[in-house]
Length: 475
Image (cartoon, rainbow, N blue to C red; front, side, top):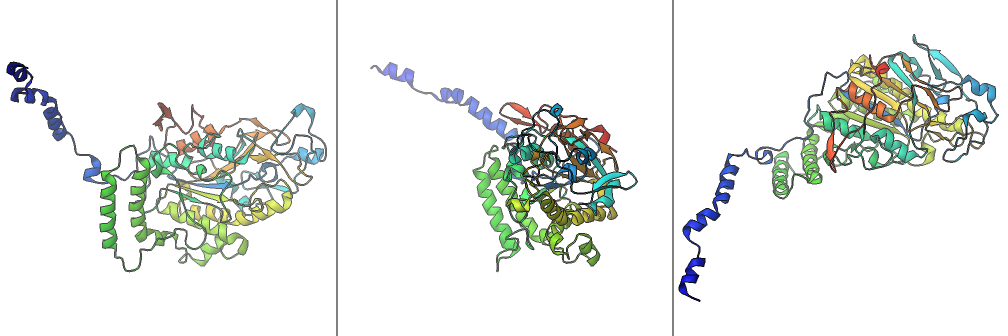
């Protein structure tokens, strides 16, 4: 090889400058770009965000009755069942197959009597003597339906809009869209039944494909709903702050923007630190007056536990929590509304646990001026069939059932939709869960078509391809 050939392949200083020009440009561009937000300050993903338009409600309390109460024994009386009691379903209704029955069992009249209450004259059974006193504040919708006779898929549809697990819950969508008005408490709180969670489990309040920071925070039953709230003995707040800052700086060094689990963990650490100063006061009900305790039934054995959760819900929304979900029922069937047998025993037990506390919640919110800005929802995953199961129970009925709403901009004293004369199917103004969700978003000032998240190349929404806002519900 000649020396000339070697010199031709040599890299000159000019070659270095030419080949590295793009690199110098990138360095120059980087210096002109704004510093990443994480390097300047930690961004609070739950900071309050403006709604799309003026809202009628600021927060939601969702009272979920696990296992499904019978609408025809609570808020939707059917005199025809008295007439046809013990007879088979007329052939004109077709074959009705549910989870455990095949439509060949006799019709069963309601064991309870109904009376009209309030200026609006709404029908309520003797199961709910306390809630009946508040019908003038409620809006009844008697024509909802879901698409599964099985508990978990139906629960997913009510909570997430889909019958499959893995989609974001309504509470997650709302906190994603609006954030929280409180910097020191979770934006989305879930309070299950002490005996256990509902069949649907954690996907009922999960964030799905949304950033994990928007999932529900579970409060445990009992006098200490938030565990490990107090700092370790001998550790000062300043020491905790330094430790947390160091830990989070290390986490942020290795965290990608797409790692929502790590981002959620960092946000959780920050929130947990702030909660040590503020949450004890929020969950401490010892300073509530004797009148308030009586209002929620805290001094009565059968209502004390559920009443405590209802009182906590009021205290949380009062302090800026955006979405609170309280589950009545969970764990063993004996502590659910799932009355496949012994309908009377089951519903009188579950109603006895919840009637007074829910009435107390409505009254307390109203007298504090909070009901106008708090949307209270009562409902479940479906209703019950008008036919009997085992002679004294009822099987699942997703074809038509009742939910009621109060406060938060709904039309008080209204009744929307109806089921047929036996209470089997929604007959007038059939309403899907997409309509349910679209209406709740609307009351909170959110446009269902503008609240979306890009997932797998598709702009996903709570209402999927869209629901209809129930205009008759709006005040």
